[in-house]
Length: 100
Image (cartoon, rainbow, N blue to C red; front, side):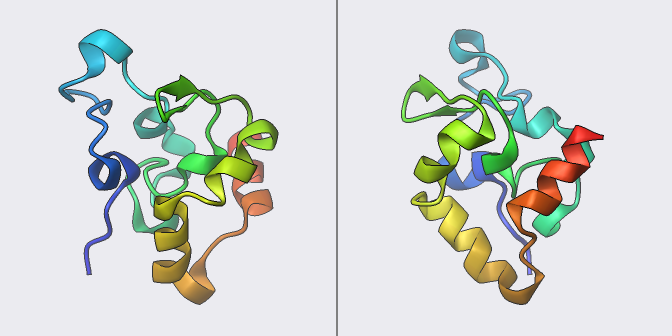
């Protein structure tokens, strides 16, 4: 089964070649290669809550610690968690992947 990445699910248009990059820039999520394949996504496309400086609800989000409370309520986060079920990787594990 094909899994959607956050930019596909949310339709933000901030992935490379997306329709909103001229005004908003490219999001750091599709560029985060250290998380490629996580939760069956492209780069950090299915673990966006780990990536700093994402643009959600029209505002740049800060670090994981500052934004996770908001992310935990996000419909995309909940969808990934449900789809991955027992294969869902905890945030602490993902943080280790990008901090090395």
